[in-house]
Length: 471
Image 1: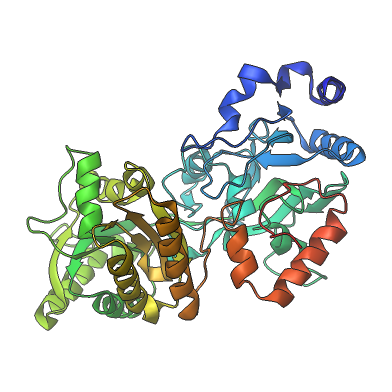
Image 2: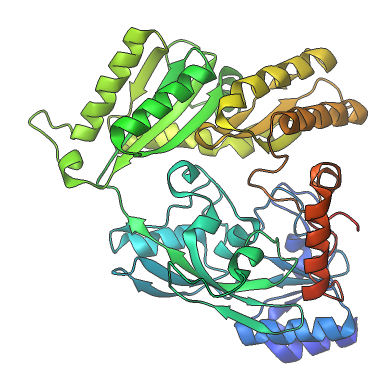
């Protein structure tokens, strides 16, 4: 091991090799769960150093685990006996091209810093989730992260034009084109995005930018049913030309859990409601954003008119529209704190799942039945990105019976599959869902994935034990 550390230090300099107590913070995930002790944490400065590190690791058959902001939720950075390859020093925002609406970034660039940099040009990079202040773009690309704006802008995969990556052999794959059309062979970019660092280490990317909204209207809605809410969503999308960019589901149980975790927080409504929706509409059209004589932009007036019609139809119970940025921030703070809220009690059962939109209510009903059958006193605080069919099932059971927890988890997962859904929506597979991959993934697809892994990483050094079940 000492010889390996000396070899790594010759590549990056000894100041960028962390061991012992210096490496300890990297040995746990953001929840504090142990992820094993790495041989060393190595912090390269550029792609050439990443390539040298991987060549060394491949020659010596030493496992390498890439790590970005360490905000993952699936155990993707467990690194016992591995080189932990930190992208933190490779954090430059290299070039912003406003006319082309692109930005070139290194893998260690923190998401919020990308947001700030492009905002100066009246543009947005619309990948948004609660951990954006520490999450790095390399990790977001490696897991094909989702977030709250998928409804309008898509997942991370949809926001990336090009990447640079280093293969396990140390070969650099330069796909840093800024083209919207490039039909020249296999799409290696999409292969490496979402591969969770098992096929290559993403070192840089070309990201798509969008015009910053000129006006944004945010509201909390109380509705009678999820199906009613989705009907409202479809109507709003039609009437606004697809301007809805967030449609988030929060049940009353979650609202109560949020207020337990944050006692100074306010409830969204004066009365409690079973189903609460966070809605946001944004426009880039000047005619929709310019305030009228009443001081209200037309997009806001359009929303309020639609909400009035929903109230008359009886599908909408109540609504609160944010009147200023402080109120909007308060609404979003409630939703973005969900990971912290859900993990304030132990134990917890979680699934990151997705179904077609017209089957969400059915899945929620089946989840309720599963909990009632196995642990009637358990608290279901599931939240979700309702507009794209992604539910974050979260349940506080009444016991520490691990077998019972696994039964609930497994039955919720199976109910999702039975409805044509996925056992992994946006958090990735990591170590946590390898058994689910073996159980639910199409055997032909798994066989193809194993062949790709063997071809690109014949010695199996990159992020071993993640994503793919054993062959």
